[in-house]
Amino acid sequence: MARPGRPKMPKPDLHPSVESFLEMLTAERGAAMNTRQAYWRDLADVTMYLRKEKNTDLDKATSDELKAYLDDLSNKIHTKGENKSQIAVRTVARRLSAMRQYYRYLVSEDTRGDDPTTTIDSPKQGRTLPKTLSEEEVARLIKTAGEGGGADSIRLVCLLEMLYASGLRVSELVGLPMASVSENQEFLTVEGKGGRERMIPLSEPAQKAIKNYLAVREQFIGIENKAAQDKSFFPSKTSQSGHLTRQRFAQLLKDLARDAKVEEGRVSPHILRHAFATHLLQRGADLRSVQKMLGHADIATTQIYTHVLNEDLKETVDEKHPISQNTKK
Image (tube, rainbow, N blue to C red; front, side, top):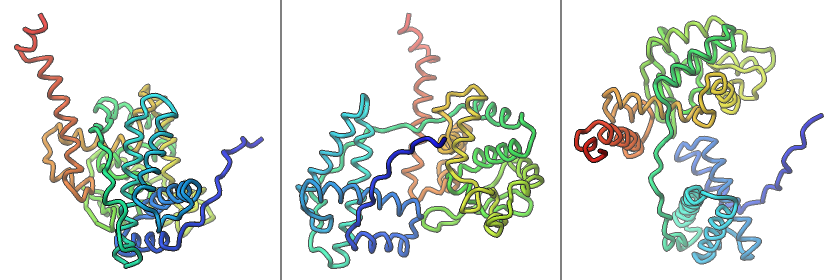
């Protein structure tokens, strides 16, 4: 018997200018489908509030109406449970960013004469350090993944080794085309956000894992949608896209964390990306190189990892420095 699913909310019929805005993001800025969908969700939520509470639409909203929406959103998140303040700040900041982009577009198209978001201040966000894993924990995950011995196990090891060796975004990893891996498996060529292409060197363990995986890759190709599967480095018989989905990979990691005795909440594709960057910097890699491999357009995004190192350094000084030792006596 199928489990009763969560009831689907009706999708709002958004103002035509929203669709034009989303088309601009794709055509002019090279926004990925996930980015486009995220903007749609954010603007849809604002639209539903404005229509229900203010009897107006998104294209006509005033600054006061948008402020009221953001206040309402923040209050709703706070009432869902304890320790939600940081979640509320991040959500409000993201919704405000989506609105700003939308209204700037309307002004640039002469559809609207003013931008109502210019008088709205962004919520102050505390610095959130990225979660990561230790080198020992990553090694344990890879070792545990290989203990099965079958094709599924070989593929999972390959996914882990490639992710840890390259720091790819999960959508980049599962969606890799066959052509992205060099003939000798020494490099990956990846097209990231905004169509920016980057080349990433692969470690020897990753190269070995790729060779082992290629020997069993055919087992993941089915009869239906075969053309799409043939082009994908990580094909899937059940996925409409023809490749392994992000959701399936995340579930595999969750199961693996349990088997490897690593806390499930600390293991995800994104956290392995953080581990890649953190461990490289800990071993002396320069920030610019890490920025290029992660595909960050702005080095300020990469600098968050230096804060992780600073926290580690502070702990080391507190534990080892003679002055700290004397103050503890």
